[in-house]
Length: 421
Image 1 (cartoon, rainbow, N blue to C red):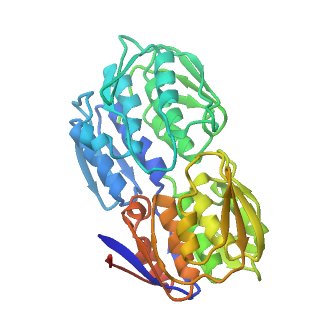
Image 2: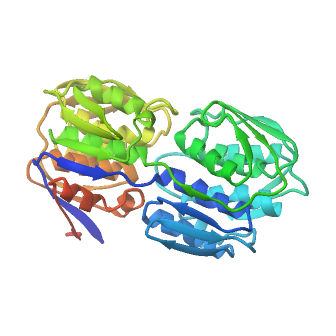
Image 3: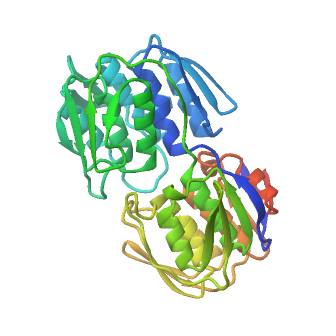
């Protein structure tokens, strides 16, 4: 099994280009199932998860070609039964349910898997499908949904931790071919939802209000093929910005959207990190000694839960006390014990992590528990003295395209090697 070997203490300098958004890729790829005409999706990140999603689409009967970040697909004849062993391994695969229900009026899909970061139920997805007229049955690890006809409805999709991104996407895709008008209240406002709505509208759908808590979908009879380029990955951009700050370097981040990163930029500014626009790029550097910051994760446009772990690594270096409160997932502090191996002083109190920053970090073997925890440990390893071995980087390969190569281009001493036990 592969791991990263990192010799830390080197400030990052240079330019890095951000890949297409992983979280935007899944629903956009799934939306191609809504038409029997050819579609082309560009700018997809070359990740294990996007390749896996392409396999799922092919398993449904679509003609798929995925190469160099471009998906060419035609779902002329498809089936509504998704392979159990494929779908159960990746949570994002649940987003094929909405398109299959819309087009075939029936779908059978296994309950999805993914990173172990806390409960991520799909009951809001199913609530939305039921509101459109689908009959739902869960049995033997499968979800069955069927409807003679889908009819537009007004529904509320807010949950315990706020709106549901994949749930909003799934119901949007189911509703575009329903009769009448669907109104989703407490809809997710993430840029990835706006990106999906843009693609659906190019296909001939009628979706308005994406990016706000109320989305209105007027059903149409048929969608046609279309081309689309996914938005840049805001989480990858945030990760590299934090890595630059943690190593006291200066980097230019190309193909990043500052308007998607306002909450992250605000907290970096509070931590004494400068993030400035330069044309279509972002230039990131420290302005002096790091300062402690309090962070609470919230649905967009709040601070993203997907950047919480990386920010913790940075604040472990900031003299003083920072408090990070996780409001989205209840099991997303699994990286804390691994950061402690590197010398970080962090205590957990309920949904909050108390970070007593400013202690020097030193290299050690650490174990990644999930995708974003992997990135946090890499950042900590880049800032630490000595050598850090980050194990289980298959988590990281699910969400970051060629991270080690991009970091080496910025001067990092990082290698991909076989794990040493």
